[in-house]
Image (tube, rainbow, N blue to C red; front, side):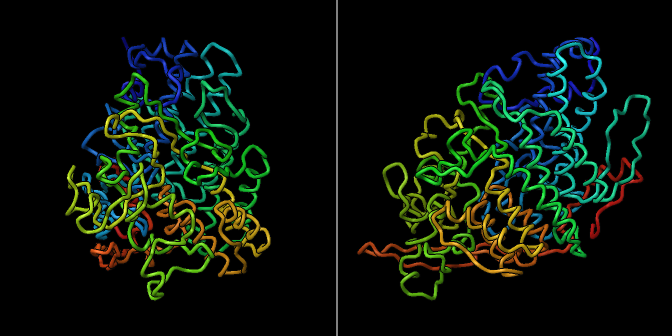
Length: 562
């Protein structure tokens, strides 16, 4: 039977859902083109498959050419949260050099022929092709008009999401909203400007907002909502207003960013979640703060596409707890956490230096596994010879941290990855209200509205039981950027924040780790040392377009410096 090419491409691309009935169990590529576009339930599954565009946006493997993202399991879901991006900024050191990532960027050696997992040009355009096919067919599909409108809203959002990811990585890109068929012998298109791309994405999101519901039944948990579309608009406009794409500091762009964030806030659908344990923000499913998230089902039968990628506990836990030690925090990130009274931590302070993990911002304890941190009823040991150090580990020694820390954020203390490493229920949050508050605070501060900026900055700090901030102007903007670093740590935000604010030169420097010696009396000696050299390159503000794409399209121009 004749099948449209895009169905073959995305046959293995399945959304990992918390509900078994979210997906049709039968592979979509077993149906003909004619069958799919005459059955609204099959079209619903087609739309669902394209949600993989969201989960593939973060850091992940393999490098292009190792395994096709559209065929079989794609390891990008392992780091769907984006915490792997921490390894290329001042958050983490990546212990495992998976398929050459992230070393090329750290060495300043990323190039059109050596892009590793960065950018995902072809993957995003693959989803865009699938979405364009949908729009060419949907009006002729019989079925409930309200469902068709909702599916259109979802696909407008997903197309906007893909283009937003492309512009964050490459600047202006090629805008394609039609289907190219066999009669199109060549694909020869030019790049649109960044501002033109922003205008296009905003149009997609406005259409999505007009069609999407505010909520869904439980069986459809994880689908995009009106709030998600408005939140993505906030993120897009904040990026557009930032120095990377707003060199003249056009205040009207900051006003648009502020307005977009405030619309989300004023929806009244979301509120800062305040569990007794801050870490539960990332563990309690569908809590009041979540705007867009993906939910994994550890008991689903479809292990190849669901459970295998459902491995956050295994990936992050310390080695003695059968963890893999991915995205291990660096000393710069640890030192960035304030004392609980709001003052800066300082190694020159003898009291703080003697007990560096005491009396810190409560978010530190929810984010970092440090030497002595309690986990599952016993202490993490990263001191030399401790069971979580390279010299003391007894299981999978190559997974032992070399920075002295492990990442605790997102890890569920109640889950035993030693017996079920592939089958964890969890929630991956892509957009939450705290981020929108900080978007609004930053845009407001740039507009000189210090009172509004402080109001929303301090709401985030108050939830963490940290003292209020004060100030105005550049001092206040710096405090907001600091708060983003701490509140959104390891959520895939920092890398894009330092790029859009043109701060890479301050971040791409040698990073440090800690060596801890345990004395016979139980006291510790702490020695900070350089762990990894990193090189700043001006060209890294935009990624290179893969050489194969340039070769296929003579009108496609490369980014500067490549």
